Length: 518
Image (cartoon, rainbow, N blue to C red; front, top):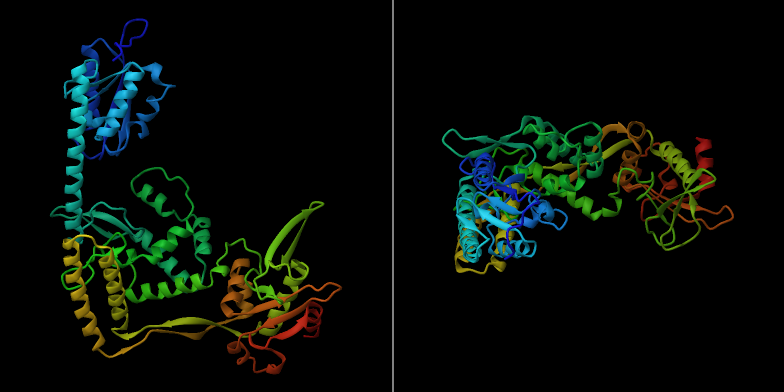
């Protein structure tokens, strides 16, 4: 190996390395590690130029990838220090492969590695050998620790206690007097969870929910947890994907899960780790609402979608029309056009104004209906949940490799089977959706809603318009009004309107004439 590299004054320049996997570990605290680094520097007439700190960083992370130490292991920083000093080798790395890579890098750049309490110095041939041996033992120890941690977490999962995993929004950890931790409801976040659930069941898009929370200054989950820990918030926006995934998961039911699957007790019941934020029935209602969004994915656009996106379609091919905006001479012009290029572009503002006025003229005084979830009677919800659990266990059985896992899954499947048999023997009524009046008219809802809310009102009501611009002022429109709305138009001649099977047709000009005559 290259000889000791020194500055022009002959004084060794020390780069200290401090690492801690968990900041709560007092036995290997950063201050103690720093003391040992300065102790070695003082005894070797060396000068400490920098002590890097990597806190809450696993020993499995490569020294080159660590946020603190990594930037000093580059060609740009290599000329600023001579010897890398740490308390012990495992503070530098617990990976034999990473340690060997670091040793070779140091040899190439004329650097030393010193581990104070291990008595290791890479300046000698024996020291380099001991570094490699110690790295192997450190990696073995890391794997042993990992196995113990996994076993401990498995036990904690079965007992329903919190084992240090990410805390779902709506909960917070609380110490148990007898030892360990549990999750309890976070009263501040619970208010926003209730709002999210209410808005989803009311038909609002997840994007509009996220935008609303952000605009009203509600801290995002990440910022909320930072605030609880006394850290500075970063102003992160609410992410609709995060909301969607949380709604899909069973996190707000307060149950224990592992790799997406529920953890069951010997009787086949889900183990709980906290008081539920929502009921099982509400969770199933949420899943039904989310499933509808998947089916109507084309309508799940962002809040800045054009007013009739998902409502206006091509009369030739029935595809949803696309929206285009362009600037000409400092003025914006907007158009709807068929993605398959049927007909010419339709002027957006003219069509939107005619559509809006016609819609309010025909339906403004009619009561808006909404889909309402009718809960299952008796044990139907529990039966649905038990069947879902069974499907999850069967899927896990298909991928299981070891006999141990297969035996455990077989026992759980048998328990769930008994539970399903018992539930099936009880009286039951299937859950269903029904249309109920909201107590508000379309005109009232229209005046209250923003642009996105109006678009969702049209989509949720099933109102649709198909058109095509044939040129020379010929732009026929097929105006679709669902049958359940036609039935309530007692003061109109229903023969003047058509359901989806038989549309009511008129041109944009005729729409305007109808408006003027009413």
